[in-house]
Image 1 (cartoon, each protein chain N blue to C red):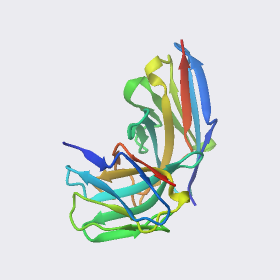
Image 2: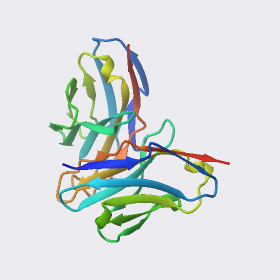
Image 3: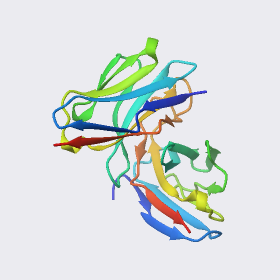
Image 4: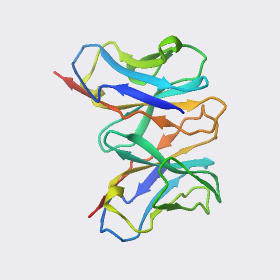
Length: 114
Length: 114
């Protein structure tokens, strides 16, 4: 069965510091992987997705993620945090060849301090 | 309004009452989804629909009923609300059923069951 684990329910960084949000997945077949962001009182917005075309995926707002099959990971990074990056981030997995059902991680709330 | 909308945005009800949450999308997407968001669980799929008059259960369907008579609407009904159904509910849509398809989320409905 598919599952997603996000390490750290809360992450706090200083403005300008590196952002690293961790995601590990479990899937019996090659997966598609997604990162969504949720700003306060809003719905989820797609940041980026991995579809096997390239292991390093660039998304919106300067975020990127690297697919590492050997580590079953898809960590999200941004070189320099902005105050506007404060939000909740969700990693999700969907099986290739399968129906469009997303399995979400529990989420990581990112706080950015001046 | 273009996009995907949910109503009401906030709802307080009492145990045992019937509640219907509305979801409307203007893209003519064939697939629609209902999720609930709870602390520590991320988002969990309640029901999904591949087209008008085609619906199926997700991970946590008990206590919920859906219908889809028109492509653009996908209401979710709690037939007899319970406190455990206090949650934030998100509707989403996608233009295909393949695992690669992005899901677009509405702003959510915050439901409190007293």
